[in-house]
Amino acid sequence: MRIDIITVLPDLLEGPLNHSIINRARKKGLAEIVIHNLRDYTTDAYKSVDDYTYGGGAGMVMTIEPIFRIFEQLKSERNYNEIIYTSPDGESFNQSVANKLSTLQNLIILCGHYKGVDQRVRDFLITREISIGDYVLSGGELAAGVITDAVVRLLPGVLSDETSALTDSFQDKILAPPVYTRPADFKGWKVPDILLSGNTKEIENWRHEQALERTRKLRPDLLKT
Image (cartoon, rainbow, N blue to C red; front, side):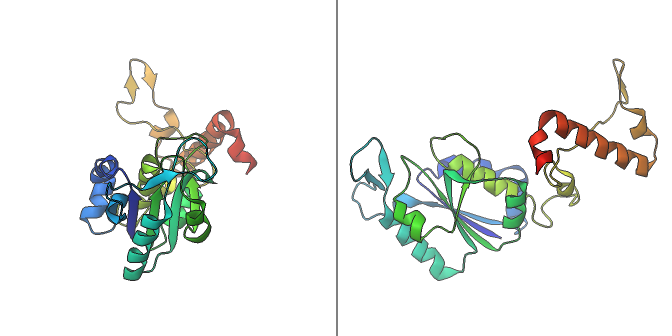
């Protein structure tokens, strides 16, 4: 998979995407993540990529020209399955969306910034808009990092235990059950006996019941879907 991330703050993404599981995927050649500085694609002498909004109002708006320019260059090199814009009013990002994106080959993520982007970018160039929550960030870089992390960890061969991702919260529309490790007894706080029984079927049943109970308590909205 290749993910091209377009941003006005490339340094904000270099750190998070060069560590842990994402870095492992890059080193294995399973994921190619390329960060592009949008300012490299403007003809403005001051490297500006924003301007005042027509009609007046507070805030600056990302201009269409440098965005169009980098999109045209990238699309001339390969076909992209999705061109994503990170926006507070996009569709809500969840595990199901991450699963679907992980099956694709090439993605572009445009990080929103300032007051937003010229609407013509959204109308004619973007294929999908995604929000990671009902709040506003200073820019879309953190959202792009979240999307990239959630998608790349699902790629075959990225996790040392590939079945691990299948048991994460939200994969089956419910939260994950509680987990324990050694010691079995710490200061009188004991691991449930069922987990020490060795009875695989009963353990799986217990885990499913615990997952449902946790979901009912913490995220009852998930059970409605």
